Length: 247
Image 1 (tube, rainbow, N blue to C red):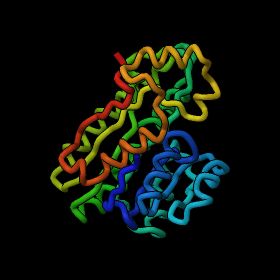
Image 2 (image 1 turned 30 degrees about the horizontal axis):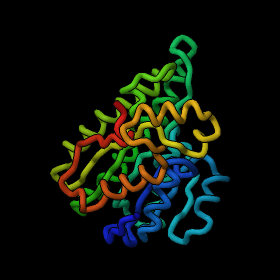
Image 3 (image 1 turned 180 degrees about the vertical axis):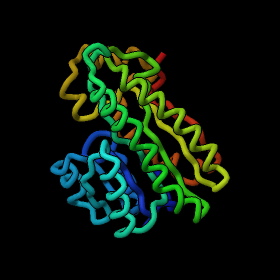
Image 4 (image 1 turned 120 degrees about the horizontal axis):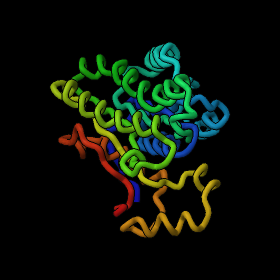
């Protein structure tokens, strides 16, 4: 069952990495709550497909590894739809390679997509949030760095860094009534993941979890809605693990 919130009606919400998977589910969930949702992604085709049937969901194509594009896209979004009340820093990439295979450019790119843009966008939306003395920022981490999945060292570094970023921002922005939290999903069955895994992986996942069902992108979206709403008004600086109770 989807909870109905009144918090987001006609409020400007940005969701990065919204062309598919978790980001797409989050963007659609906020749109269904009558927010004006900026769906950001580099994947123009899937981004426009996500937005096509929703009048209050608008696409913005942006390479989040490029700070200049991030800044100009934010300026365009604010000019068209007003200041941002909720920011969901979701975009990320989990390209696997060993540290010995990884060039300095590979490392820099992984951190730019998984961590840097979260800091930059938070800095861009913070002044208006401070002025209005309210706002919510949600950063996407992962349980992968906690479980030490193989050949993802740069990804681990970035997603662990998201936790530090979240706590630092929560401390800095708290006096302005701006809440900053993180979500750390476990194994989520996005469309991409579903096309890569087999029945053995699915059964292994269920065995690892206390709850014996697969986590969907919509499960993460509902967590994001709650965290951004006034129902979670006293929660900040926290990382909410959504992994169905992996033991």
